Length: 323
Ligand code: FAD
Image (spheres, rainbow, N blue to C red):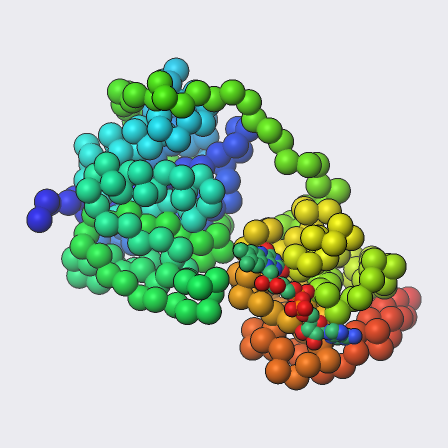
């Protein structure tokens, strides 16, 4: 078995000069794990302005690769650069976000390093000389604990660890000039997603509606409740697929991961793909006519009732309480 160092490294994702929240989550977890391995937490920052981006991330060391080949996102070049840094440092574990970019890079890096990959993890721990990951499979229906030898590459789901622990500054910054062959892939353009009217990931309160809302006209009831609570309306996928709300309002596997202080789910069954996007909300209140609806398994409070009775009554109560 190849020897590894004690450091725990992580890849820093960024877009348009902003470090992604997931990277702060990784930074916090890497620091905690490095405390256990007796090594340092090492941020790997690739791309134009890497040094400035690294300045926001709490870690012992930030290794920056800022060469012309990696100025813009290019999966081959980025995977090559991260693999080169990892090869030089042989970290005990190398963390990526389980995001589209992380899923693009982590398998390529693991293959290049000939290291095992633990993907879709909601938890990662160190046990002796092993890296242990708890992965969410079948859309969250089953959790699988797997262990890999030190040196493993891990992808962590968004929301698995708090982001605040990873905000800060690096203890030291180093530059690395990784030679990468990126000629087969060329960055052509960044296609922006359709502009969101509301960022549901930044709301403290979400009034979320599912197929139980029955028609587009009824969404107004949810809008009124959300306004009374000072929140926004989000939805399960069928509401988006029906074209009743924009895609940016979708919660779940193929939508957004949200973590509001309060998530009110009306007429949402609680399919694994939906739960994946909201199960970490601070307080979950579900209203559903079906007492067996799986949403009740994750809800802190559940009401078996018709949402058309509850929603307008709640709006009135909230308005009355607010004076
Ligand atoms: P349903 O499952 O039809 O549930 C409607 C609920 O409303 C029922 O529980 C019913 O009892 C209740 N109800 C009906 N009338 C009332 C009433 N008057 N009052 C109160 N309750 C009532 N889904 C997502 O949400 N987000 C995703 O990102 C997502 N991604 C997916 C990705 C993949 C690859 C796949 C395969 C699926 C994905 N899905 C996603 C779809 C998911 O599997 C479910 O089909 C979907 O979440 C169901 O939405 P729903 O709960 O609104 O509808």
